Amino acid sequence: MNDTIVAVSTSHLIGAISIVRLSGDEAISIVNKTFKGKNLEKVPTHTINYGHIYDGADLIDEVMVTIMRAPKTYTKEDVVEINCHGGQYVTQRILELMIKNGARMAEAGEFTKRAFLNGRIDLTQAEAVMDVIDAKTKESLKLANVALRGDVKKKIEALRSKLVTCIAKIEVNIDYPEYEDEEQITQEILIPILNDTKKDIEELLEKSEISEIIKDGINTAIIGKPNVGKSSLLNGLLRERKAIVTDIAGTTRDIVEGKVNIGGIVLNLIDTAGIHATSDVIEQIGVKKSIDELNKADLIILVFDNSQELSNDDEALLDQTKDRNRIVIVNKSDLESKIDLSKFDDYVLMSALDEEDICSLEKKIREMYSLNDLNNIDATYIGNARQKGKLFEALKSINDALESANSGQVVDIINVDITEAYTALGDIIGENSSDTLVSELFSKFCLGK
Ligand SMILES: Nc1nc2c(ncn2[C@@H]2O[C@H](COP(=O)(O)OP(=O)(O)OP(=O)(O)O)[C@@H](O)[C@H]2O)c(=O)[nH]1
Ligand SMILES: [Mg+2]
Image: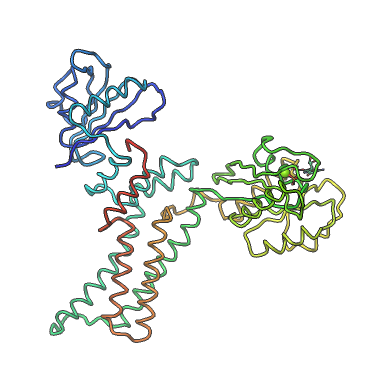
C-alpha cells in the first residue's frame, strides 16, 4: 500500500486560489476528517464539492474539493485537490492539517513519479511534464506537448519492437536448433533490419538538435575588438539600452546578457568586452571572460568596424572562429568604408543603429537554423541530454552489430549488441530503470508536481 502524499501544487506566492493536492489510498478519508459539507467518501468520482475545512472547532477556510478516484487520475491513485484561498498562511495551515491527519509531505516530483511507477506515463512523458512547465515560447510548448502525448515513447517503442523480434528469433534458433520449420536468422536477414534501425536513430538524433534549440535557445556570443559596436548590436537586438555604449574603446568590461525571441527561437545573447592585447589588469580579466564565452557559444556574432582597416586583433579573431558557427558583421555601414571586404567569404554589412538592418540580421539567423517554418516541423524530437545520451548508446550498439554482421560473425555474437541497443532504448522510456535514476530524475521537479 502506498502512503498518502500531500503538497501545495500551486505557486508559493500569494494568489487568488491555492491547490493542496493529495494522492494515495487514504487521500479521501484524510480530507473528509477535516471537511464539513457532503460526506466525501460517498460522493461520486470526478466531482467538485463545496464546503469548509475545520481544524477541530476552528474554521480554516471555505473551499472547493475535487474528488478523483483511482484509476483515472494523474497518479492512478485516489487524488483529492483542495481549492482554498490563495494566502500563504491559510494554504500552509491546510497542508499541516492534512499531515496531522495522516498524509506525508510529498517529495519534489513525487506525484509524477507515482504516475510513472503506476504505469500511466513513461519517462519521456514525465520529462515532458517539466518541459511544459518550463516552456517559454509557442514552439517549445508544442514540442513538450507532443512528447507528453506519448509520441516520443511510441517512436522508441516502434524501434524496440523491431529489435525484440530479431532477438526472439535468434534465441529460438539457439535454444531449439531442432525446429526446422523455424526461420533460420542469418546475417543477410539481420543487416537490412539493423540498417533501418540505424537510419531511424540517426534521424531522431539529427532532429534533437533543433529540439534543443527550440527548448533552450541559441547561446550567442557577440565578439570583436573594442569599439566596433558590439554593445550597440546587443541593445539593437534587445530593443533596449541594456549595455552601456560610448565611443571610448574598452567600455564593456564584463559580460552583459539578454534574451530575445526571434520568431519563436530564443537567442541567449552575451555581449563581451572587446578582445585585444592590453596591459590594463581589469580589461585583461574581461578579455579572458570574452574568450571563455567565445569558446562556449553555439553561435558567434563576430563584429568588425566598416570605417577602419582590419587590424591584427581582427585578423586573429577571424582565424580563431573560422571553423565555428558564426556570422560576420561589418558594422557602421553608414560610415565611409575602409575595410577590405574581400577578406570575408560571407558577411552582413549593416548598422547596429538601424532597425531594418537588425530585422534582416534576425531573419538571417532564423534561416541559418532553418527555423522559418517552425509550424510545419515534425515535432517528435528527443527532448533532453539524458534521452540523447541513451540514443547514442543504442546507435553505437547497432553499429557494432552491423560491423559483426558484415564481417560474418555468428548471430549469437551479433545478438549481444542488439540486446544492448534494446536495453539502451528501454532506458529512454524508463523500462527497468534503476531506483537511483528515477529518484534523481524526479528530484528535479517542482514540489507538488
Ligand atoms: N556611425 C555608427 N556608429 C556606431 C554604429 N554602431 C555603434 N556605433 C558607435 O560606436 C561606438 C562604440 O559602440 P559600442 O557599442 O560601445 O562598441 P563596443 O564594441 O561594445 O565597444 P567596447 O565595449 O568598448 O568593446 C559608439 O559611439 C556607438 O554609438 C553604427 O552602426 N554606426
Ligand atoms: Mg561594449
